Length: 102
Image (cartoon, rainbow, N blue to C red):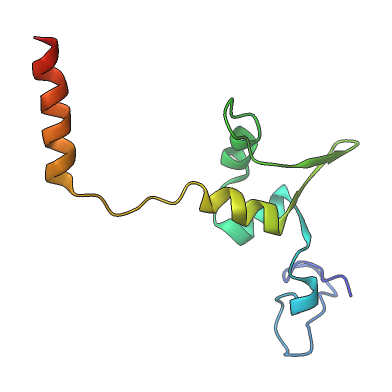
């Protein structure tokens, strides 16, 4: 079953009665608009991530249509996960680097 976006006329719901894909459809392809809704990022940001020089957002181009696989987007985002850092340690490292240059 292909789900239309919830705001489109005739959008279907899954067997749980919501507009989220079923588990067997969880690795779907998003166009940039759908990915924008899923990730809460603007289309403009997503387009810029497609052309990053290092580790760009993986995508597929069909004619003029750009598609991103959900699982690949999730993996790409996980590579950008920031771990909690100790601010004082970061400041000490930065000051140590500046002092070594003087």
